[in-house]
Length: 398
Image (cartoon, rainbow, N blue to C red; front, top):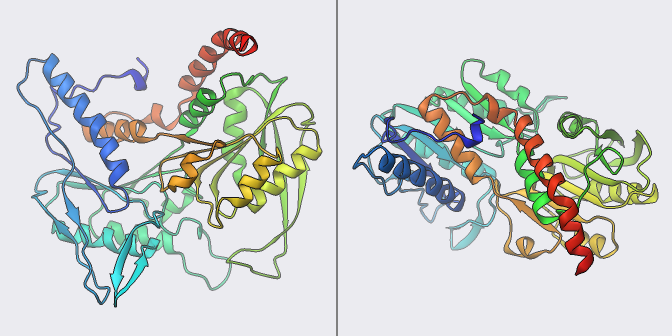
């Protein structure tokens, strides 16, 4: 039976030892995950004739701050003997705190400090600690080129020393960072299935055949995820090579001089571009211009984390010019209300997937099928291919 269709036997297993600590900034995602887990547990318990019911796996917590900016971690109930899952979104910049009478927005450094405070507040009483950090703290600084810090590797070593047993993340910028903690569990999941499902639900008339559809990698660093898409869909693959000015650093990175395309002709084809992060979005929009000049039809941009660090206006303008059709992303990090209202933005809900992962880990199930949803993607594409002619007929009638 495919893992996604597996019914977890919560009624027969000791799942009462699970506890979820959703830190500030990840409360909404944590609540969605908890709803799935509670429903699965109670449904199975009822089938088994058990009187056991749970209202929530969430454990109330907070990290209040003094007016000087100092903080502390508080947990509202005992965690003794529990398998604890801490959900933290280091990219949620919407949360504020008061310091010296001025409001300051939470930064990734603040969230990481709060994570350590909550772990310290447990006092070593938890049975096990798993940190669910979709976007890795310091993950973009994954290697040392000169006299540079390695924040992500240092974070992993610190968490291991504090008693963390496992790290669960999604689409790590470079998963080789786990080499810093070879004896700690580190699972890196990809939102491939959820991204494609969200895309097809919004645009059911997309034809993903090799003759009509093509995958294009935005740079050499994103080739891995794009090779996967091309392999599982059976389509051609192209790539843009970014020529950078390594003599200068602007906003923490070397500026791009030009995009050079390598691959088959994109003329008349729908293009799917996948990356881990959209930050400023400049390179993605330049890529759209290049593809349109080469005759591409619809362009679908995808990123696990759509951050839009310089705002949405440039994407609004590009959409109005017809440079792209949609941006598909996930709810693994904060998205502004304005972004969610944009007609070109498609969000894939990852809460059910995250609940599957946490439930599987808690009950000792294999997660290999979650790490590689190859079969599930094929089922999805086959289902849409069967109903696509009918959908097209309805569209023509309308």
